[in-house]
Amino acid sequence: MRTAGFVLLSCLAFPVALVAQNTDIEALSGLQFNFGNPGARSLGMGGAFIGLADDASAAEANPAGLTILRKAEISLEARRTTTAQTFVTGGTYPFINTSDFAAAQKSITFASAVVPARNWVLAVYYHRPLSFRNSVDVTQRYSMPVYFIGPSGPVSREDCASMVDCQQRQIYPFSTSVDVQMETYGIAAAREWKTVSVGVAVRYQRFEEAADTIRRDVDLPGQPTFIVAQTNSGKFYGDAANSDVTFVGGAKWSPSPRFSMGGVYKQDATFAAPVTAAQAGTAQTVIGMTRFHVPASAGVGVAFRPAPALTITADAIHVSYAHLTDNFVSVIEYGAGGGGLEQVTGYEARNVIERHLGLEYFILGRTPVAIRGGWWRDPAHAIAYRGSLVTPEEVAAHILFPGARDENHYSAGIGVAWQRFQIDAAYDTSRTLKNASVSVIARF
Image (cartoon, rainbow, N blue to C red; front, side, top):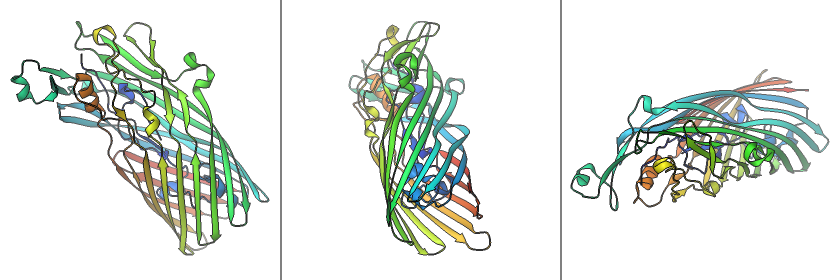
């Protein structure tokens, strides 16, 4: 058995919403996306928007909230997200060194058109919940982590020196690149009955992925390089590989102007993503079939106005991440011994509950100005290795898939509203994420 190389790509908490990969390819290990609500206003309030849902972004956040809109309007949002990826960069197990590598993306993340019609409201919208690109060659700047493995598992350097059957191993040197994009095209409709409204959105979602790792197998003569990749492509599954149709269902109860509450369910989406590998210079072949999974989520929220100018919001959202390890494909051993494939088991992902809090205060005047703030907690949900530590592959998996940490997000925002025009800006920050957003709304 020989060691394998991995990248730990940790804690991507992109607050536009989720996802992680169910294969231990280096370029994708540890990915932690979060799919939150669109809109700068929602972002500034810590993403706590399910119970309020009173602007065009409700089409995705909670379609039932669209019924509060009485005029036709269009909206547009742009975001800039900087994500810190954490890679293993040396050390001796269990004391492993890591370094952060930042990647920034800018894109139009939401656009919508809303048309009220008596008790009905219709909307069409575009949402880009995921846009991530990065390319890193760790071996150019850092040494690879090492560990010592005895007959029963990892041991210290000192204990290994006194054992007959103990060897020093290392994570293979690697370089990686990844490009993951997801787009949503949706149609939403909502209907109001006195204090209760319900809404539904049908989403056509497209997904594209190109991720690869070049691994140098230091255990083989000549240290050959191998390319392991996970690529979403119609070449293997047909055109349906890149798309899925899902729905969002929501409800909202507003018994008074001071209080409202809502609930929403978002269906999961899956996209085919075969795993390919080959020695550098030869044609890639499929070595495993897996799927890129966007977990389902269900949330409830409340909005309370203790004063006309102040709104307080709170959400709780359950996200089903446990299915991320369904049909898991392990490629930790590919390349050693000429291309063997060792299936390492013990990878897990856990369901979580996100908690969001937000507030909005209006400075009243000829031109109202809104000041916003928020907090939310993103529980660790990246795939982690929690199996046994006996073989070299299991120890390598534990080094590179230790699991992410819970993260606190803090946000702030501001908005200015005129009779027919509104502009909002917000900033959200955590240990691994810096996210800035600007939204504009025009009413007719």
